[in-house]
Image 1 (cartoon, rainbow, N blue to C red):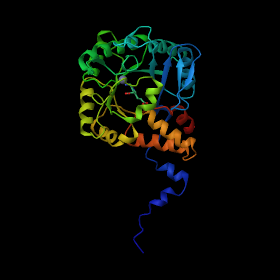
Image 2: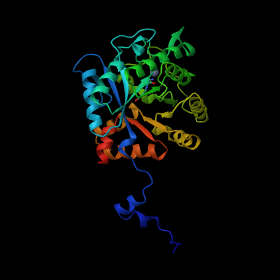
Image 3: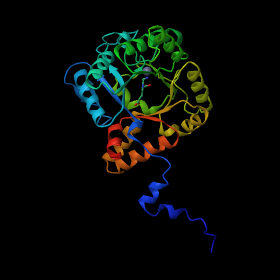
Image 4: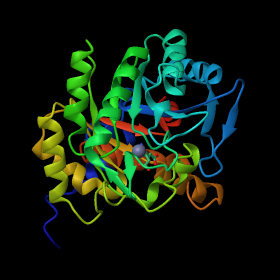
Length: 323
Ligand code: PBG
Ligand code: ZN
């Protein structure tokens, strides 16, 4: 006989024992639900590639946010689909922009819900890029001013936190400076610090109508094979004043998340993105996997790798599954 002094199975025998020695536990506080605000009234338009996720008009999003809060969701991340788009993304920083309206409505319907605003230009530019375009290129430094204006207008509308996602160099510093000057020194920044140029944003671009009209985002979002560069990106955002650092997408970049956990002591977020959600949904709708179990196993893996905060379209279902 081999030496069986150690038998790991002893602690797996019953659910009570397994629960006693469980290392990672999801909690209802872990999740942020992304929501998409659109123009009109009484609009609930389901995204084909994201079953269960809708574009919601301001009246509807106010109800949806309140219902999510009642169901245990502590925070939401807002995106907007403006009426019109232009070269300078004016809908992003207009006082009456779609996200600004949604923020004000949600702050009324669910005052204790944490309202986060995604700070980017791609949903508002006619060309769909995350910054100002000239001669086919996204110009970094000119984009900073518009991103800073966007963040300030989101804070002025009542956002509790802003989340720059454009991947422009210096965007966190520019936004921090502008917020402070405008009297919003208490508004935290959650930086999309490590955001890869991923094929998994496809369904989101349908949801937010934000696909680039030409080219792609590889000249500003990160190259998938690079992990060391992720630490450099994260370090820069940290030094520019980011309060929370994010990795995105989540599940196929868990190695990066794990290294971030070792290197940084600020809170870490991970974005379980639209494509990651859509893949689970599609397999489940075919009856090929158990949706709830795959969802919980996936979200657990993100927490186990080191995330404190998980942005996911599954926020409500996960909280429900936790009971
Ligand atoms: C905007 C933004 C994107 C996502 C979050 N913020 C899309 C993109 O970079 O093209 C993706 C989220 C998702 O796929 O769920 N810059
Ligand atoms: Zn963008």
